[in-house]
Amino acid sequence: MSKFGNYIQAAYDELVHKVNWPTWSELQQTTLIVLAALALITVLILGMDVSSDVVLRFIYNILGK
Image (cartoon, one colour):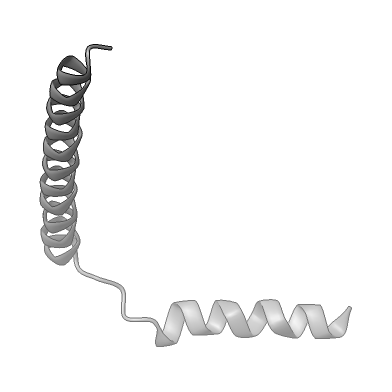
């Protein structure tokens, strides 16, 4: 049990004293970047989905199915 206690103490010490936590403005900026990237990727995937639907419907209409 002593090893587990040492592990918890070392983890706490590292989180409190060694980790550089972002400031509130840095956190807001990176959150906006992530949301913008998410929106861009969503639009790209939507575009690929719609275009593949159009192409497949065209092919199916040509084949008469």
